[in-house]
Image (cartoon, rainbow, N blue to C red; front, side, top):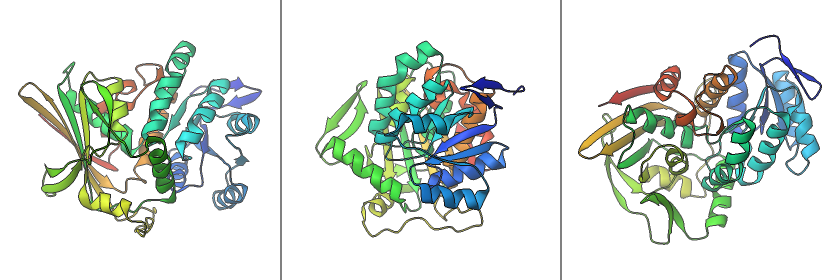
Length: 352
């Protein structure tokens, strides 16, 4: 990492990382993962009381910052080698925090699952980031990042494919308050429409998505799923892979859980704070009559986001990247190598 450099009068050691939204459910997992891997998180966010409580709990520095106050964001990022945005709804936070990262000339990563927020990031910052040689990695999370890595790994040496399917098998889905708020913001922006990626473009539809059976690998086996249950993968995958049809699926029970207003938030089932939720992601790419598959298994979709985004951060800061600008996980990182590095948090299978 070297001895450090100077940015805005602050010494950057390469280990100090600003975490915006550090006190949120996912943010706390990210902070813990950063500490575990030898980074020094700077806690940042809008709620002074929650920041103070987390600072007291962790012994880490806290800096109050608001997306409505660019100067406060600059102070929050001063001396940091990078920033991780964990604060939803991301429709409100991504642009201001990216702007602050560009001013500070540091990499930006977020864990946004919101379709519209990710679309906006690619649309509004791709040219500026590329010209500046900046690194912006959106959706570096369970939704968007992990699915994109799996689809990219499944492609192997293929340079194009006809279609990609990413099916999510969740044992349950107890949404956080942030997930519910982000979902409400997305629905407000889309209205009654749903989005899918077909024929090489985003399409908006008002009909109900199909229900079908997806044959997950054993021991999960066949499960009823909602087809075209569109997640961030339909933004990240087509951003760099020439696949004209990208479809995501979600198990029916998980959709029922997240749709029910009385489904409780996740609760800790072990000392790390993970819930007992398990997941299986089945990513399939098809070209002609050939099919390839990458499968990932693990526990707690919120908790697993932490090793995902922190592994990405480490690779960005150590130069293990393939491009600059706004880039999805599978474009900027070596997908198979990245996925193997997630062990033991994620169990990976690559099937021809």
